[in-house]
Length: 228
Image (cartoon, rainbow, N blue to C red; front, side, top):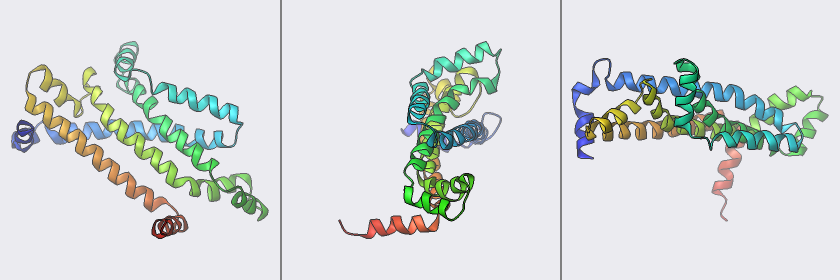
């Protein structure tokens, strides 16, 4: 641990093309790209499945969760080789890892909307699309953001494997440190990944609170304040 701290506080590691800011930017870039694709795929699909038959939803969700069991590193290298070294294609395993939490939480969030609220909105003359966007999705926001937060933390931790195919990121410190027996770099890189994951966790927690409708926030706070 002391070696890792000395490595982190060495100013030489904060400058140059392999410096911590550059590697951190690469890591964040991969994470944001993967997370954006996961949300663009998982959110609409989750909304769609919430209004489809249970058998269809069960099949799709279990298939998506099955991808999480795949060996991410092996799949990363395989796709990288099959795609002739395409960096974007190599990120597919990370996307497959990030989609299930977003998909499942979106589905569960919409399914848990009180049917009476949905019926009341329809009774007011809202169309199905308006009910989805103005009623169901806002109510589902807390669970949706929990899924996005889970996906983000998982991607931050797993994106370290990008270094195995020379895509940079913080994983380079871990890989180089172990191969070259520079354990200070390996420990320092690990600490950076942990700190980044914690920062992402906190950021998305607050984002979830801000995006949650005020009425739901007040209801949640009232439940916490009510003695059991």
